Length: 352
Image 1 (cartoon, rainbow, N blue to C red):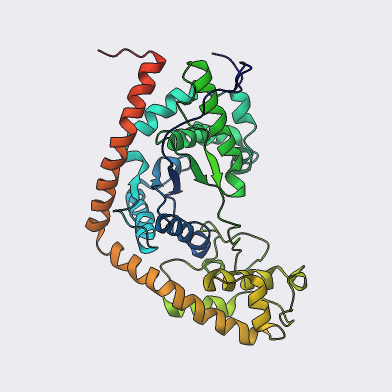
Image 2: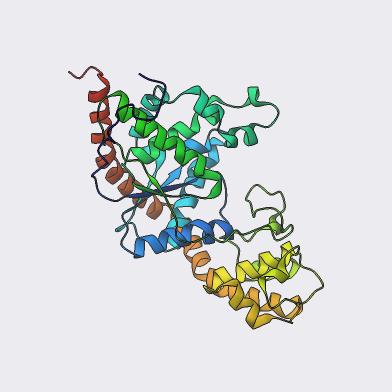
């Protein structure tokens, strides 16, 4: 094997010729919130409704890179699946499955661990951020999970991946691994070089308590986020208590500069109403938060009530979720297993 991901031949290798496929996953590590819905789930549903072939998995293998309570992990997996379904994803049109139920993920990840290079992983900024000052105490899985992520994507020969700013570096690593595998084993075009999928800028939803920090399920304050399981009264109360400021809303986006909480609430309103922030400001310019917050609360309840109700129904019937996950795992395995079999042949593993 060589240590470079780029082809040495002067001629450009053949491009991947397979079908279009879109893949994404969400970690099974806790309750989802409004930021996840607007930034990911709603967008997945839009892709599905446009006819895109989508693979949506629950990343329970990624979740255990940090400690997870084994007694809760299966329920956390079901909750992510329930959020997929409640957001409008249709298991008849999209493949929804738990990562760990498709053994090919781990098989391909090991091969890719032998293709990827330490220098590539050393450059991954997310490991540095998540491990902090005590990286020697972090799991090996946390260090190598970008390789597993590459396997998640390439196992289905996904051609596009919805990618936020924090994941662009990992997608580049996936492309490097794919290209190096294709080069090292003389199989040009075997794996695609997946592209980031952009549907326009995703709304960046910030904490209701701090407009400079992203809305996060790890924030110790439940008042910082709107959970997908919050009822109407809870949503209204959280928006009423959300941090704002004493000024009225401006008539231009520039007027939101240096007003992070005001900008966040306007962003949330725009995303829920499918409007631009400019349109929201044109409607509410000159009004204070005493008028704007009740309007935002009413809109949030109207938009989220169907999702919340469906999530609650599904979580009360885990057998229905399990049926979806089992069927999805079988369909995903039917696609993934032949890819791993071919990889094993290419690598030279014994095949009796």
